[in-house]
Image (tube, rainbow, N blue to C red; front, top):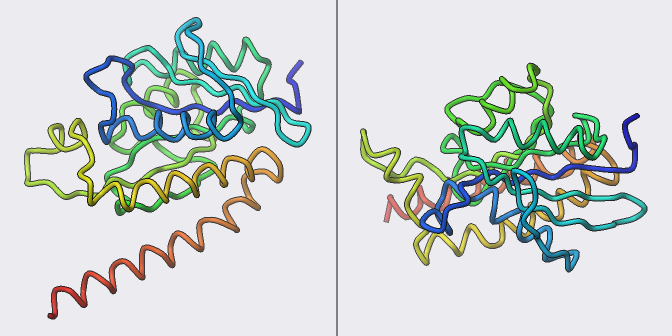
Length: 209
């Protein structure tokens, strides 16, 4: 029987050391920040690094799969079953080139887009109604250089946008486990859209100068 008070928070990335700090490991960065906020420590476990925390009567199981990104579904399926967590109590966090850098968006369902990690989770669980948080990394690369871009590291200038975004993402995770996806989307998505619009206007001003 599913535990109504338990949530699975999944940060996607590649566990090998050479991928640490890359754009494609954004999900790991958010998961680390969530664990840090609760003073929880990750331990190596089956198919993932796992940290556990409690918040307002809820139990959080935070995982960073140690499978390759394109096999993330195997870890998510295992930990959902192991911890008796309902899919609507699972939040998958990952990088997205289709959102501007420094912006995140929450969605209750959808396809995998171009992301191999969420794509594999959808395929493995055989359902698309998986709550997710898409963390924007932008498309600041020349045609044909997408792989180099997503596997590259954030510049110091980019981190000025990324770090506050991670802080807001942690707040959104806390909201998700307490009030659910719909209210969390209502609270955070509108603000993120406004933030993206303000950033666009700021860039347009710079281009006009």
